[in-house]
Length: 198
Image (tube, rainbow, N blue to C red; front, side):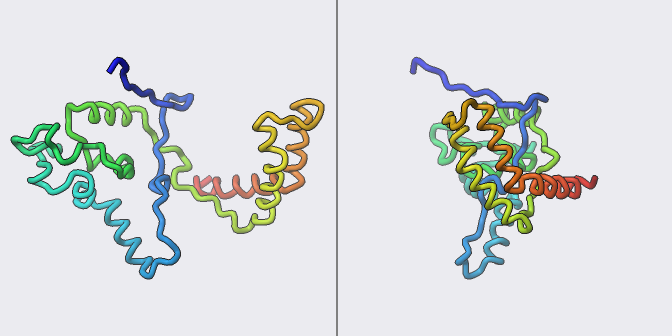
């Protein structure tokens, strides 16, 4: 090929990338599940037990992969990467990326070098795991949704109603305040302070 694939880290101004929680993958149990408790137990096992993580990602130990004396995954003797039934670190279960300490890729590979580089710039944001409880804000959020649909979305797409962009921004702010955005902000700040122990 006459082209080369590449990537770059999209970092924050501090130079870091944020770790994301497991829920980022949309792990959920369907409401019609007959056994939601058992389903959650199975999901928890798959997400946290290295034995099942390695089985799902790498296959059967001894047949599809072996672990060397230093604990690194590698291919069994006599199997080349081109003949391998699986490709290390190229599985579809991205939750492994959040707990790579007990689940290393093969060393001295491009994937290993990338994971080390990622680890060097990755950090857990202070609000990792925070969930905003909006149960007491249903009326305000419904009103704000209407405001955003009517005023914010057209503005974001570049459709101007008034005489200037600033006029539309002022209208959006006024409508948002009338819909209760200040109460939402105050409640969010209260919950964040409580989560952080402030």
